[in-house]
Length: 526
Image 1: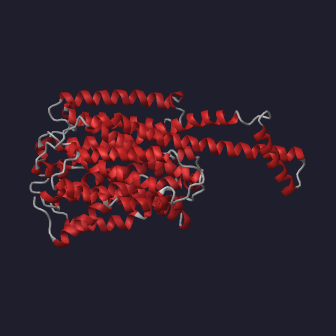
Image 2: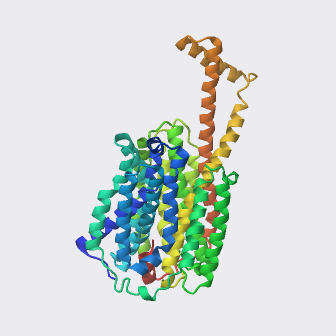
């Protein structure tokens, strides 16, 4: 299909990018409103976390199936219905009066949103001529990074001026406009949805995928909150995840018409690409998760200030995407970008682990620039590598698997971060508490100074002031232990990128995909 022209092309670009950003924004916008939601709905914070979990589970189930569903129903029809579903579910989320109702509609929203992300890029690439589709990939990559980055900023602003339902209501006018534009401007491909009768639906593959991936996502999302395998629910869902995934793999490798073609993972390039996508998911989502907790808990940022701290360096760095797309379109191979991006993200993690509790927003600016550039330089090349050496009929499965592994990498990274922070906090607290002994002159001097200050301010007795001084020191000790734990987690991210770095050199020095195949790969991406 030749690219669109003029006004139609502009509208398609705006529609698809907006839809992708809207979907990804909803993966993180809720995070800043959990406490408000728990109070409004009368539930504890652990239960209301299901609002995040249900959305993530729906996303990770639907993403690998979007290629099949788009082929079966027709890509434009599937895209429009998904957008309508996402918009309606957004309204129902905001109107929910109970946790069960909210969790259900968040799951529905995740089903529609996962399809938006997975179909928007294909439509976007159709709007560009083959020689320009790498540039289109750069434009879309901006949305991939901007979406989760904008979430804390928009969410923080809404929570300061409105209330939590507006986190969902804000999607409604955007969704309505995007749907109208998609109906009028997104073209249908020739023969789209016409071969429905000739497509054999792999029901067993779809069911085992949903059960296996959904259960695994639950374990990763809720493991820390449920105390991992001390919880019967985690034990049960772990077994279900194992059985479901083994059944899914066996089914997809033995059936003639699999919902997801797993045979492509037999290729060295595909295996390494998916491992790398998994690590990129760890870096992208874990950094967005840990940074807000660090600066709000330790540095005293508000939710809105946190969002701004992430937003500005992202806006500066995100413009590298079109440049990478243009360079790849001119024939520069993806490997150099991936190598440099991996190094930059590793430096981000290590340098981020050296910050302190007195850093302000601008102190984090350079650190977050490294993060944005690192992700930017890895994301678009991964799209090209994910289809290297494959026939065109395998592109949708390859891209879907790459997207799914990136999403699972994010869930895995957050789960590991939660567990790691908990363990490192206990260790750091123990190490720091060893210095809080009367045999330590520095501690005794600090304790006496605080005690005398409390007596001077409040007139409390010596014993009461001493008790309050110990409480102050204990609070300071916990804060320091948490800070060291968060900084350790940034360095843990560096470790993952260091482990995957040697594997990059096993990828081909030049892309094995010719220009037309690369264009087709980009068309089927997401």
